[in-house]
Length: 306
Image 1 (cartoon, one colour):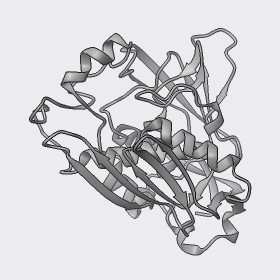
Image 2 (spheres, helix red, strand yellow; image 1 turned 120 degrees about the vertical axis):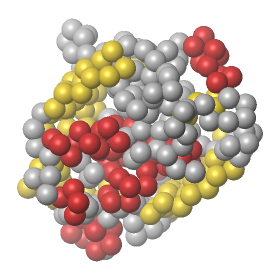
Image 3 (cartoon, one colour; image 1 turned 90 degrees about the vertical axis):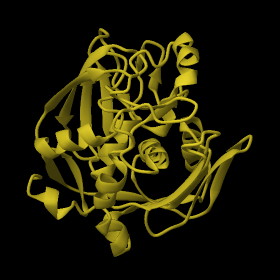
Image 4 (cartoon, one colour; image 1 turned 45 degrees about the horizontal axis):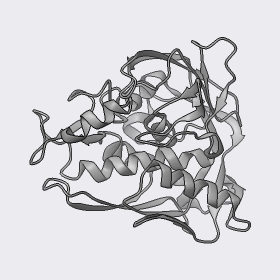
């Protein structure tokens, strides 16, 4: 629990980008301690490696993008969320297209993939970003805040003028086990009436009932319905974990969001990092026990990990 993690061996995954509609293959490689999460576009000659940090985030409309222009990787948030959810700190990712594959629209496929691949412990202590002072960002009536807490807690509220969603709120106390069981299976979602508008913007070209929860004006259109009654707010928390992981450390802080999205999450990360005295980076060994224990892998999975 105290030590940084990577994956035990390289693994390939192929799928469709939800926005680009393009088939893409991604190869995840083990990486050394302090490497972080880094992407490389193999379809672009001599492309620079892109480190996944809050400062390298480009576009944030309907997804989180690392990099800009041609050398960019779109829709990284679900994969980053699962890596954080499993306490994996260091991976080198080669990708032969512009977008991380959407899989089934949740993080479940990546959890399964990493379970089968295995997790390796590195001989270097983890570091935690400990929030010392509250920091808040606002855009219109939407806002996000991070404040001191002994462990990662996410208190999220969404408001949609739709009879199935309405207002949903969930308070999630992070542990690896809770993340896998409560958050990782929650799928991205969208309104049927927005599809034409998104496609005119060059988005949602690969979206379907196989990789998103789609709602018409009254109901969920997916034949099998929802995985959770509140799947929508659970997916918002999944996105939040992925976006906040771009701070580059495990986090001891409480995040509260209201009608937030990728842009607000990134603004919050940047403001926190730019606010003197608002946080401190400490070794895991210096942190309270409960924050460390949150990253203990579930017993049901631990036999599959190295």
